[in-house]
Image (cartoon, rainbow, N blue to C red; front, side):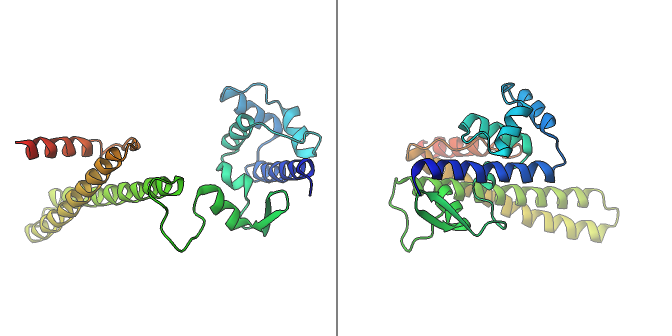
Length: 219
């Protein structure tokens, strides 16, 4: 397939995914256009969308693509590589692979037998994914600890209260360990020259804990 034909075909595939997403969401073309205008792109009109879906428009800019994906409430990567509905995707002219392999290649998750070389793009992606896992663990343990402590404080039965307090203390130890692990990981990210993502509410004190630990080490 020539590059021109591939570009047209790939755009048509993305437009088809957008059409299916729009219908699944119960949105009309004018409704999607209105959402795009709310996102700062009033030039994406219902006629623009109609031209894309009908194939009269054979290309799309990245800015339009992102605005349309968000307006449709669909992750952009799902429009590029529709898992579950398409077996293969031609990611480049003459390079057709399974839809999952195409998505994994796009997100840097292509299976390989050896770890990513330090400092490589995939290594950075793996680092941020690990950070996300640590954030999720820290949030979960914090919620469990808070819930058990709240339950203990609102239980009138002394025996039940004592049991819940003991359980809460255990969860709080896990929560503190998770926070320290996350804090250390974020410190190592900065030492590598990486900027860690902003922390969600409830974990904003993690970096402060790391700063206090460095002060104690100096003392």
